[in-house]
Length: 268
Image (cartoon, rainbow, N blue to C red; front, side):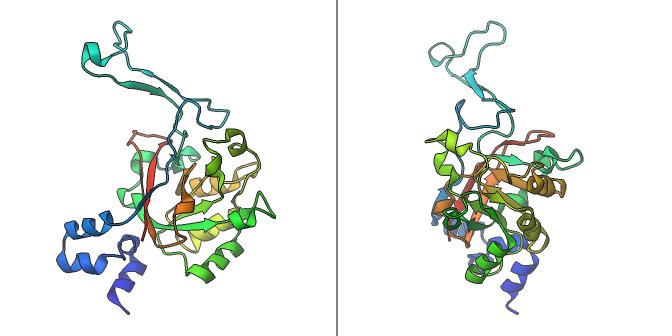
């Protein structure tokens, strides 16, 4: 077996850099790797957020204000203080955000405990938009995944799996439609298949929830089994079904149960 292929099957991180592994290994140079990556197209997968951003009604909207001197209450301004700063008040599950296992599991990992090597992964995108004309609230099935694999090959070990539904297009233009219920989502069987049979690392989607079951079965299962996800993703229509990388990061809040995240794709 080709050594690079063997590495890609054994180690998810090696698979991640498959597109430039041979060149980088030959030169043992991160500079060479960076040269290749920087020549690729980048796609922002993150929504900007504001006090008007869609959010679960149980959390409420964020507030933005000017940071002020705690002694006087006067906001800092450049003309008088030489600087200015913002004060943000928001729930961790706001905008494009990470749900760590601890969001649903009292013994699960918090956002500061997720390994750095899980923040850059191969990206696969399951596009269910063609199915929504007949079933507007379609939940991705195992059969859908298997059909995808017949066309694109097996889901790579250690991937990040994203669900494209088209919902993100309503984020800024039609918040009422974005916040509709029900909506296209993941089925529990699909989530279990991807984690247990394809051994993905994480998943993400355009909606604010993983699924539409009463008990949030898919979301509960993945978070209580040590996995994490990104919600309210954007621009998945600009990413191919396979071959791209995803980079996603967030602030390192100690024992944090969620936080707005920054995610982007590097196209092949």
